[in-house]
Each structure stands twice: as structure tokens, then as C-alpha cells.
View: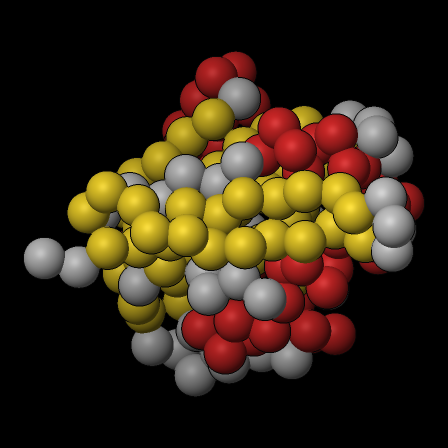
Length: 154
């Protein structure tokens, strides 16, 4: 039975950085401490630069989007998962990585996500090479106004 990490975020007043530390969780769960991440952003999307180092230390692929589902930040794991460079991903939207047969499902999921503020489940991501991978995701709205985050594992 495998376990996936719970990620705890905290703000270090001494160094002015955000830290994300994976811990062990119950089997098949992924439960990031999003409230601490929200607190660290202090309602300001411009502070994403402050949390970027913490996101790089997380074993999951991290995708941060705006209200139009455009990627505004990703970690190295997201690049590895998709085959795109960070610069390429930041020019894309969720739809760009959604297989054509799943667009309608994505639209329903996005509408539900925005209303419920949290969502988890399984989805498919289309990689740069055209292959499709099944993923597990846990997503949260409004880290800062209009900024949303998804933690994705395979």
C-alpha cells in the first residue's frame, strides 16, 4: 500500500520565505495545507515569487492558474509531467493540456470547481508529445483573488 505526501506550508519570518514540506499521509491521500499557503500570499498574486522555491521542493506537479485557466506558475515536476518547458506552459491554459475528447468534462469540472472552492479526482493530461497520462489531482481556488492551485500526481 503506497502513501502520498501531505504538504505543510509555513512562512519563515526569519528568512522571509515560504517552505513546503511533504510528510507521510494516509494511503491514497494528498492534503496540502492550503490555508498556510493562502496566508503567505497575503491576498496578493504578485507574491507567487515568494512561494516558488517551496513549490519546487514538492514531489507533486504544481499548476497555478488564473480565473481564465491560464497557467501563471508551475514547478519543475509539472514540466517533467507534460514535457513542456516552464516558458511554454506559462503560455498555455488547462484546455491546451486537455485531450479533445475530455474538453466537455473539463468544462463541467471547472464550473463545479469554481463554485465549490475545492476539488479532487482523476483526469487525463495531454503531454507535448501527444501522449495522454492519467493523473490524480487536488485543487483549491483563490490562493489569492483569482489564483488557483492544483497538486497533481500520477
